[in-house]
Length: 203
Image 1 (cartoon, rainbow, N blue to C red):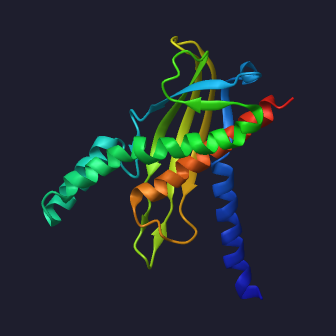
Image 2 (image 1 turned 90 degrees about the vertical axis):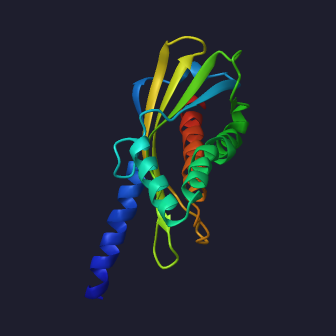
């Protein structure tokens, strides 16, 4: 039994650490203005994002594209196209879908292009760890966010939230593609943000 204690304790600490890191925290303001609101505009911001060990996304992309093109000409360029295209194709729809599902009970939804909505949510991705899955070994993705609520068409910030290291992976283990792992981080983030908002405005 003594031999099992250390691994179990390490696992417990790891799970607790992940759970704590992905919690949402209010940095400034409050969410009381959302009571009774049914429509939100949403904007996604990936500027100044860090990726893995790289301080800039540009540095990360340059390295990945160069490495892939050296192995096989053109594969790096195709990978880059997929990296950028996955945002509108997968990440953002996943975020919105889970957000809207949770807040359906409050009749609140978010969508891009709602310039007539009174409030806008800016989903700013500040850090992305792509993770990996090579079959015999895998690491989930982690994405950190800043959520900024403003009055649409203005720079008037009403509330700012932060959420660090939201994990993304598929339990079945079929997340070999980078976009599959990262999309799960966005799905979980959307669900957790909606749940957080619901608790704040349910009264």
